[in-house]
Image (cartoon, rainbow, N blue to C red; front, side, top):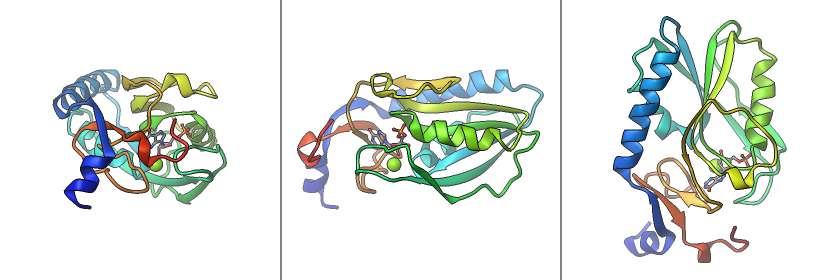
Amino acid sequence: MTQTELDQAVGEVLIEQLALQSRIAELGTEISADYAGRDLLLVGVLKGAVFFMADLMRELTVPCEIDFMAISSYGAATDSSGVVRILKDLDINVADRDVLVVEDIIDSGLTLSYLMRNLRARKPASLEVVTLLTKPERREIDVPVRYVGFEIPNRFVIGYGLDFAERYRNLPYVAVLNPELIPNAT
Ligand code: IMP
Ligand code: MG
């Protein structure tokens, strides 16, 4: 992408790089204390959570492993339908494991709700969620989330793993997508 395309896509910066780093360090401290004496299995949801997960994991002091799932929800580019399909399943058996699902963002909650039901059926010892971002105004279904990085307003955001049509994941901060790029902007 050219610099001009980038400049046109990126709106207001909601969370600067330094703020992300320091909040993730706090989450790492909190999670390490909560899971002291246990082994943690981090389950990342591809692809957006990869960036957050990599940084969070380096702030953990408990023994931990990672695995990934890829899921796709049918629907428009910026809206979740809640109809979810598993594209890639876990390699590691989660039965009797302390599982922490790592999400980039919770919007309607429909994707996560499906995922939690699916994972719970595999009988983990414990199952919790950490999300970098949440948009409480958009929630359609209640999902218990143990750790939240930041609550954000109802805007479509890009950067630090979050994409618009697969672009802009590499931005080191979280910014609002220029609404002119979204036909049915929220
Ligand atoms: P939910 O099922 O509505 O909670 O949607 C969750 C998924 O939608 C996230 O994992 C993201 O992939 C995507 N998503 C929701 N809001 C945004 C956003 O503001 N920017 C980029 N992706 C988003
Ligand atoms: Mg996505």
